[in-house]
Amino acid sequence: MQTETRKEIIRLDNVWFDYAGEDFLKNLNLVVFQDDFLGIVGPNGGGKTTLLKLIMGLLKPTKGKISVFGKSPEKGRKQLGYLSQFKEIDFDFPITVEEIVLLGRTNDHFFKKFSNKDREQTDSALRKMGIEKLRKRKLNELSGGEKQRVFVARALVNQPQALVLDEPMNNLDMSIQKEFYEILQDLNKEMAIIIVDHDLDMITNFAKEVACVNKCSTHSIRYHSVTANKILDICHV
Amino acid sequence: MSEILQYSFFQNALIIAVLASLAGGIIGTYIVVKRMSMISGSIAHTAFGGLGISYFANVNPLIGAIFFSLAAAVSIAFFRRKAKNRLDILLSFLWATGMAIGLVFIFLSPGYSTDLFTYLFGNILMVERADLWMILILDVIIILTVLVMFNSFLAVTFDEEYAEVRNLPVTFIFIVLFSLIALTVVMMIRVVGIILMIAILTLPAATAQLFSKTLKKIMLYSALITLIATVSGLIISYYLNFATGPIIVLLISMIYLFGIFLSGWKKNSHKTS
Image (cartoon, rainbow over all chains, first blue to last red; front, top):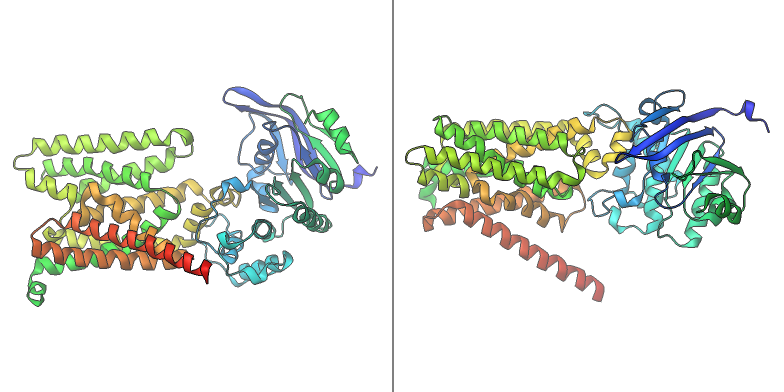
C-alpha cells in the first residue's frame, strides 16, 4: 500500500449527527482519497444519504469535524460534483437538458448571467455524457437512463475533483446500470467517485473500496476488494 | 363599444389589465411550476389585514396591503425550510389571521359595505388614478427583478438543494421571489379581489404549461391568457353592470378547461396517428 502518496480530499473525524434528538450517526470516521472509487453501503435508513449531505454541507454535524479539500464543506464543495436522489427532482418542471446543465454553472452571484465559457463547459459536459443531441429536449421527454446522464453532466460541468452520487441507479435496468458504472470507472481516472448504491453486486464489481454506514455501528469501516457476501456478513445490510 | 373607450375609468381599467397581466403571467408561472398556490393564497389573504387597517385609517388601502403581504412573504420564505413538515400550519395561520384583522377593521369603519365587496371580489372598473401609478411602479419592480434574477429563480425553483450546493443564497432568493408574489397580489386586488385571486395566479400559467416547454414561453402565454380574460371580462362586466372579478375568473376557468380538453385531445390524436 502506498497511502502516504495518495492525496486526501475529504476527511470526517468523529462525526456525530442528531436527528430528532436521537443520535443518528455516531462517531463516524472516513477518509476519501483523490483516486478513490468508494462505494457506500448500509441498511435502509442507516444514514448513507445523511453522510453524503454532511459531506456536501447540506447538513451540519452535531459534533466532530468534516473537511473537504482542507476547507469547510460550504467552501470545499465547489470542487465536488453532486447528484442527489431523483425523488427530490420534479420531472414535470418545464426545463430543457441544456438549461439544467447550464444551471450547474451558477455560483454565489444571484444576478449572474451565463458567459460563453459557461456555455462551452456545458457543451463539453453534454458531449462527455453523449447527450448533446438531447439538449433541446424537455426533462419529462427523457428515458430513465437519459435523465441520469443529464444530472451527471450537470455534476461534471464545473470540472469537479470528485463526484458524489446518491443512489443514481434507482429503477434502471441492469444493462443501463452496468453501462453507467463503466462511465464512472472511466471518470475515475480523473476524479474520485463516491457512490451510494444498494446494488451490492455492482458495488463489488466496480468500486475499489467499500465503506459501510450503519447508525448502530460506531464507525464506518473500509474493506478492500470484497465480495457481496462478505459485505452482507459484516454490515448486516 | 367605441364610446366606452372615451371614459377615463375604462381607460384606467384597460391599463391596469395590461399591467396586471404582465406581472401575473410572469409570477403565476413561478407559482405553478414550483407548486406554490397555497403559499400565494396565504400571502393574498394576509394582505387583507393591512388593507383593512389602512382603510380604517383612511389611507390608500393598497399601502397597507403591500406591508402585510410583504411581511407574510418574508416570514414564509424564512420559516419554510425550518418548518418543513408544518408549513401548512404557518400558511393557515397567516391566511385566516390576516382575513380576520382586515374584517375587524373594515367593520369598524363607517359605510364599508360596498368597498368590502370590491376588495373581496374585485372591481377593475373602480380603479383610481393613484392606484394606477402605484400599480405601474409595482409592475416595473416585478419585471426588472425577474430580468436580473431569472437564472437564480430558475435554479431555486427547479432544484433548491443543488442551488445550495453551488452556494447560491437560496433563502434570500426565495424572500425576493415571495415578495414579488406579494406585490403581484396587491396589483390583483383591484382586478379580481382577494377571494378569487388564486384563480388568476395559477390557472393561466397552468393552461400555458399544457402547451409550452420553457419557462419563458409559459410566462408569455400565461400573460396573454390573463390579458384576454381581463379585457373581455371588464367589457362584459361593464355591459352587465356586474363586478369584474367573478366574470374574469369564470373566463379564466373556461380557458383552463378548454386547454385541458384540447391538450388531452392532442395527445390522443398523436397516439392514434
